[in-house]
Image 1 (spheres, rainbow, N blue to C red):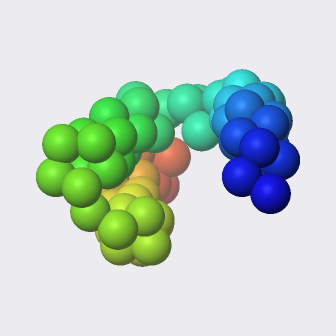
Image 2: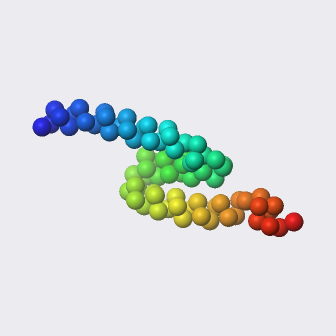
Length: 78
């Protein structure tokens, strides 16, 4: 059974990487997306935070930052 899992792990990694590659255009449309991605990666790798916490924090950050960093023209201010 352990040998089967050793063969499954590389396949799972490839599936995750393929998904990330396909989502890159949607995730990095704005500088905010890049900033959130960098901080999320640091939270996961350096600070070893749980992925659910990182996902929730990223979503909340995205909501606030997208609204604050929009162009004034997009916000309706002239």
